[in-house]
Length: 459
Image (cartoon, rainbow, N blue to C red; front, side, top):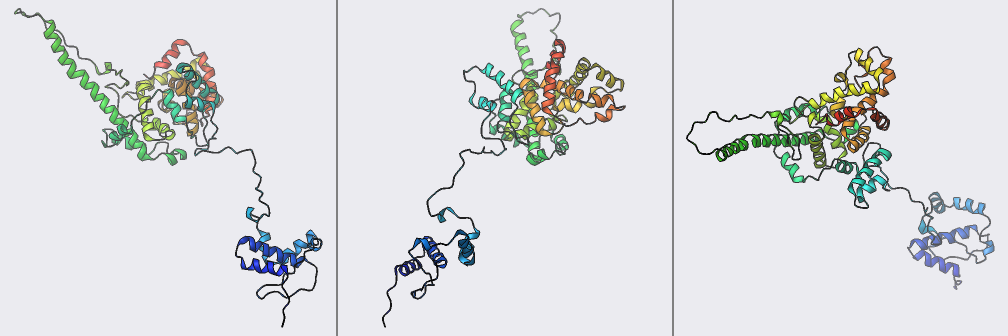
């Protein structure tokens, strides 16, 4: 019994059925769909194992219309599954790639700051163009005042810590030096430190999320050991070597004689307050290795720095060079700053100052934390960091005027309150931009002698 010869369409279907590749299967589905859409015609028998797939070579009868094609495709379970998903690049008949926009979105770094560097960051990274460091430092300060440091919502910046190191003229500290202080264990001030660290910015979630109490304890303990060593070195250099030197000078300068001397030269005992270190540190014998409030002053350094070593270098150098009077046992620098708050307020806002004085409200009662911590005690912490950018650029002594600026912003509320002490128990949230702008305005009204006292009050 003779069998009819298979047509070309049947041969194509058989070849596609034997091929397992995805492209062959897609071709098979196209031929099946084409057969479903073709008009009814006598269909020759197909080889066993293959489904009925009519084929016609006439393109005019290949498809009826777009609407009929879509309805027929929906009737097929294979095409229904293909219809529900978006077509991938490999399914396309032509090798056309999807269009990609030419405009690139700004990438984000870990802190949320755009990759494109600002003028401030470029100057900080590249250094002065002509090699003039003094001019470059002036430009850096101006950029801090005019453009601010780029930071994300949490106050984190990729270059702020390096800006502080440059403005405060701090050289890198070897990590081994810091580790050697850590490995010495508990300092003499360890108990006092532990009594304060757990409540450092306790209500600030940003600080608690980034800085642990353990890192705060380590840093303060290391600074305490450093102060302890510096004090011992000064005591040793002031007592034993000086006495030995006086004995040698006495033997050299006194000629031999058998005559009885009328009187012995008096030996002057230097007071501890006259000992001032000038070799990179202003730590004196009266300086404490830890005072209450140093934990809050240390907190922004730890928050902004990328490592504890950087925070240690910043904090230690800052308190010993810029405000050593704040960490002496009697805190005489803080008390001088509080008196300057009252005097500057009298110059800028006489009415507000007289009203506060009439209520017995001097700065000693409400501004002590703000003076000691450079306003770090007033949230939010990101605004504190912006304020510190300004203070490190133009001088920490301007913190006194920043406190006066905060009082001026509360002027109407204070004058309308019969009990201003309730208002001044806690300052309103910091707005660094407004406070800096107001400070720049009022600094021009400060007389030169009073401004000179501002500069030296923390020394």
